[in-house]
Image 1 (cartoon, rainbow, N blue to C red):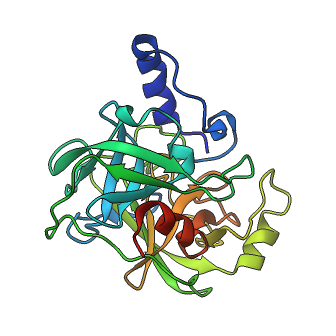
Image 2 (image 1 turned 90 degrees about the horizontal axis):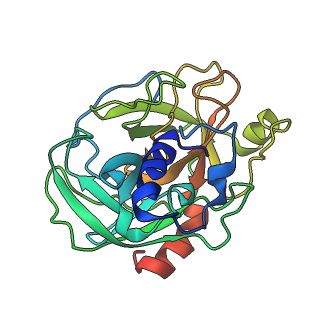
Length: 261
């Protein structure tokens, strides 16, 4: 996933702080979009598990609260020193409100690779969150959702593909889960394949999807976290559903790092 927001921040920061540590070679991959198109304004009280993952104070990716001390994001959003990262929780607005918490560690899945497999990372917070109506965890799925089941993806990413600006008000869109075999067939001629560590969601006619700046954010169904925004061909393109890291598939790694069941 090529995250334009991360790249622009890091280019500025590297001049002052030196080159970032090498970890997430997915940053060199082009042709992927970090993935809300066709959504509507939402409030953080509707989705209190959503956070903004920030690099040097600027929004770079989404994240998901799973406990008072841990947040999930995409592995392709990791790869820089933990001291560069923070989260904003408890705010509908990407640029203000809520609470900002520093990050003490960010651990990408050890088998995350150039095929975008296992695109998940565990973020340990430097101080614990206090839960409220606007800050709350979401339980992780133990099985993948069924094809046709509705799920909601949220974030502060682009609302127009390629805009590279994001939005200030949280966006949400409902999308159906796509059969895994069907999704793999749709992407069979793409440079990346739909693999077992992934699930797909979206409308085959296009028009509604996640987009740049939403990466690492939640896909939730029936009150549980089923996916992490990962990649796709463009944003909301016909016959190219969004591709998400499967939380059920990757849950054992999350539990190993965080202790969260």
